[in-house]
Image (cartoon, rainbow, N blue to C red):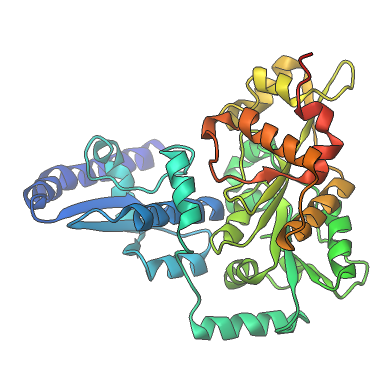
Length: 408
């Protein structure tokens, strides 16, 4: 950025601040006894935050009651998914405007010092347990119109999926979207690979779904590599051949369950209360948002001994601390451990666990013990009976010795 453009940008921001401080703020204060105006920004850059921030805000107010005499005005610009924004605009007053968004960010430092800011926050930032509880009590915020449902059925039909068929959505996070979206930050994206997965490790679960008579539909936006289908018509690389903003929302809303990496894309299923199975849960402080969900965490290996590090040791070292994401790589280097992603077989078994859960098959008592132990000890910051999802039974049995500390 040149000195001239930087000076111009500063002048524009100053202009917006003057407009806010003098005409806008006094008017809102005068109106406060009669009508409360609250102004906020809808997260736009990533689909996960667009959905979960907005969904938590709406559901929390639905459960606890909307503030009286209050008008919420939101703005956003260039959203990660236009279909989802249009659906939220049916329930909230959201103005898609570049100018209004610039106005908000120019005045944000002032707004945050007042009662007037209402920007929906990521649930781990503000009142997380109450928001997750509300999330599980309220129905989905949005729904498709009859015309959109017809459009969705046509999309499914074009992929060979009929009205009576069932399918599972699959997603593996990579960095290609970020490099294309903001190429000027390529160095940052190259260092932000913590939650990336290899789509090849989802091949076993896709084949398992197909063998059971379902369809495995791979989601994603500008994926780095296609998904190998082996010519199986029941394994569909939607991300490579069919992808659209509409399909990214419709497909997860109708699937039997969603299985994928810890990425914002899984929120497309959560928004419609579809069961979610999360593979490679990392950072370890991450959680599944509903009791109907399952997850399997990544493993960590001592770089000197090649032994897996027990989760209770990782807990003591701070690997489960909330908000640790930005420091996770440094934490690994400091304690001499490396992250080991889940195998294709472990992800396949996670999918089988989800099928059993949906079908109401009881969990083995030993696995149940490890599930509860993991949640109570390692997700202790949520408190008991928090409503979050559980570690998958197959993983709990396989790594029982890494989960439950033997203090005898």
